[in-house]
Length: 133
Image 1 (cartoon, one colour):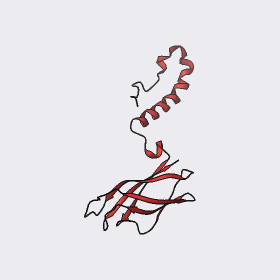
Image 2 (cartoon, rainbow, N blue to C red):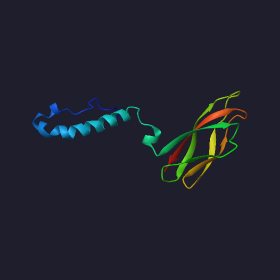
Image 3 (cartoon, rainbow, N blue to C red):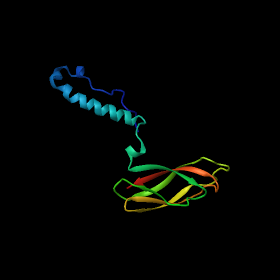
Image 4 (cartoon, rainbow, N blue to C red):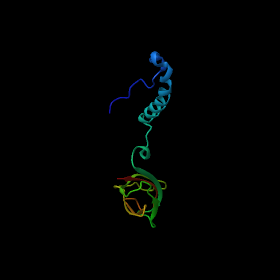
């Protein structure tokens, strides 16, 4: 991706022969450009830029003992649920392998049915990203 331009605003003074009406156009245009410029400078989140949701759950042991439910608000079925972070809150041993999850989707609700790869006996905050498609 290329660099953003250094000019971020249009000025009425740049259009002296159109001064009677150009201000009405430039004000909303400059608001839009400022928002776009700010967002494209590392201001977009996953939820704003993609059809996705981020959820963090606390899990004890090597897999959850109950199902974790949340509503997926995209209006369609998810194409995947991924573990993007597994932060130990009471670790006595490191995670030695990949952490993944199994899920089901029914009537707008995602159910995490299993999380694998965690060290038994530890507690983790697991962050999931659900992608829509």
